[in-house]
Image (cartoon, rainbow, N blue to C red; front, top):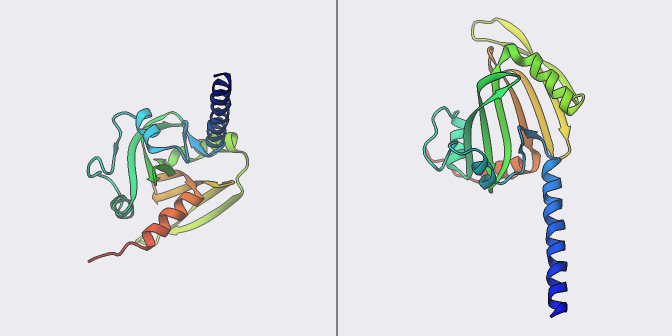
Length: 192
C-alpha cells in the first residue's frame, strides 16, 4: 500500500514539474495583456467571454487574407482592447492547431510614439529599426518606421502606417506556429 501511495506521489510531482515547465515556457513568450503566444484557444475563450471567433459565426471586418485563413484551418478572433490609455482599439487573434500563433493590435497613428516607448520599456531595444517610404494613389510620399524585436521563437513588430496613413499596428508572431499555418495554407487548393 505504501509503495502505491509513494508511486502516486512521485507521478504527481513529475506531472507538476512538467506542468510548471509548460507554464514557465508560456510566461517567457511574447504577450499582450497576458494573452501569450502559444496559449490554448480554450484558455483564451475562458478569459475573453463574449469574444466572437470564426467557427462560431461569420466575422465581420476581416480582411480577405484573414477570412481565407479562417476558412482553411485557422481560428480568428476579434476583440476590443485599450492600448496606452486609448480604448476600443481592435485586436485580431490568430489560432492554429488550438494555439495562439499571432495577434495584431491596431491603434491610431498618433499613439505610435507612446506605443513605441512602452514596447521599448517592456522588451528592450529593438533588433531592427528601418524607415519605409510609402506613396499614396495621388503620388504623395511619406515615411513610416518599422521596428522589430526578435524574442527567440517570437517576433514583435511595431509598424507605423500599417494599413493606411491613420493606423499603426503592434503585431506579435510565433515564428514556428505561423510557418506551420502558412505551410498548411500552401497546400489548400483554391477554387474559383
